[in-house]
Length: 190
Image (cartoon, rainbow, N blue to C red; front, side, top):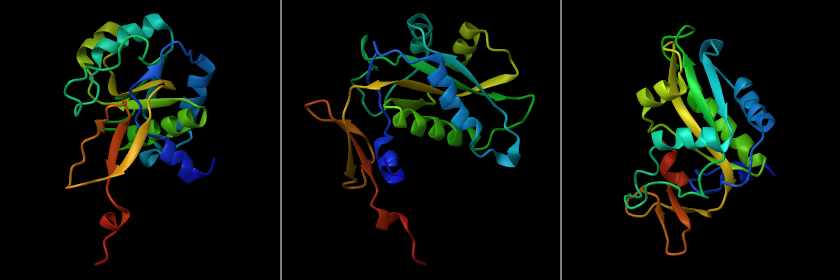
């Protein structure tokens, strides 16, 4: 697949085939893509926790919030939950702040996941304190993002924004619509 097709297919996915297992090796290969990505000042302050067992995933799921714009949806139901998670941590012993490193790393991982026939969701709405306690994450690490990874079971449709509304939505058939601004609206000609 060419690069633009890969970008077009790399959409936020929130419903998965929970029975589809993801190997530790696959998760490590995805993190390796993040490792090879850019890092501000080449500090490389990110660390990763990998979870792919049903028991581990069950522990993480209640600490996450899903899809703020879908007010009547509290997240994926059993059977449609992610079968793996990657927790992106900032190592405070290596840096005071993490700039955009975790955004670059998360997108690199998502591109790699889609290339492997998977999908995912970059989650920033996390009950961080509770999850740190539950996973026994030492104090010198900060949870930055959690990446939910799995085999997608939803169709994602890119639409043009209408009337300035950026909110994603679902149609009657369950298709997930994501409005995007027109390219001509993004490029300024001063």
